[in-house]
Amino acid sequence: MTEEKTLKDGIYPVLALRDIVIYPHVIAPLFVGRDKSIAALENAMENNKQVLLLAQKDALIDTPYTGDLYKVGTLASILQLLKLPDGTVKILIEGNARAQVVDFTQNNNFFEAHAEVLSDTQVDNDAEIEVLMRSVLAQFEHYVHLNKRIGPDILMAVNSIKEADKLADVIATHLTLKIEDKQKLLEVNSLQKRLEMLFALMEKEISVLQVERKIRKRVQNQMKKANENTI
Image (cartoon, rainbow, N blue to C red):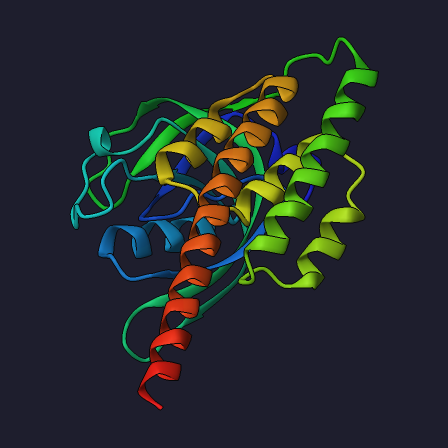
C-alpha cells in the first residue's frame, strides 16, 4: 500500500455495509455475501485492491440502491481475501482515508463511484487538540471500565496512539453507537469538532452504562433477598 494509491481521487468499486461504519486507521474483517459486493471485490482485486466502503442508511434493506447509501465513506485497501465454501467471501480491509461520492457511475454488475478524498481541516490550535486528546482518552478509559466487552489490550493500544485523527477513529470503532452517530463522526472534517463530538457521545454512553449498572445491581440485590426469604 502506498501513499499515492491511498489518497487518490478516482473511480472505485463500492461495498455497501450493513450495521457497520469503517474508519480510516482501522483494520477489520468483513464477510461479504451479496452478488454485487462480491463483483465489486473481484474488480478491486484485478486493479489496485482499493474499494470504497459506504454504510447503508437502513440495514434491513437486502438489495440497496445508490440512494440507500451514505455519500461519505472510507477508501480502504483489501489486505486479504478468502473465498469460503458457502459462496461468501471473507476479507481483511484497512481504512485509508475519508472520501465523498461525487457521483455514481453506470455499472450494472456492482456499485461504482467517482469519489474524492476528504482531508482534515487545518488545525489552528495544537495545544487545544492536545487537551482534547487527553480528555477523550480519559473518557474512553472510563467507558472501558464500565463496558466489560472491551478488553484491556484495546485500552493499551489506544494509549499508545499519538496522532489525534487516528486516536479519534480507533476509539470510535470500539464504541457501541448507533450507525447514524458513527456516520456523523465519519463525516466531520474538523479534527477539533470530531474530538468534541466523540467526547460528547462517550459522555452520553457512559451515563447509559451507569444507569444499566445501577439497575443490574438493584435486581441482583432483590434476587438475593428473595432467595434468602425462601430458605
